[in-house]
Length: 162
Image (cartoon, rainbow, N blue to C red):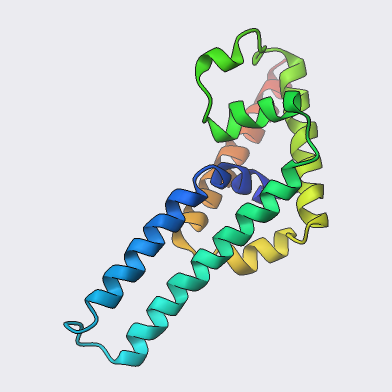
């Protein structure tokens, strides 16, 4: 499985803020259009692209919400701890994040989430086609891949060393 499911989870809790920023950008571009020396067509295409990105992000949020809807409150705690980071530390009292169960559960839940995403209409190919053209998502994807590669290298080193 690729890292796209992880990227989607990291994005999920911040989508509304990004959508608001896009709204602000669109408004500023529209208001500044009279002083912009580029052609009207180029200006309109830029605004339309921003609106398209906003719609894609809202669609991503909805697909993610639906993909998460089958998880229990206890399972959601794992996502909340690792990806969303919206809850206060007190929410995670008596939540073991160091044991083997935690890491195994994270893997199992991520696999199930990726399957849910695909069933809800967002495959890895769809994600690549629609979202990787957005620079901030491409950068997040690059960072997640790099982190996964580093973790895999560390795992191989541990196996070789002991």
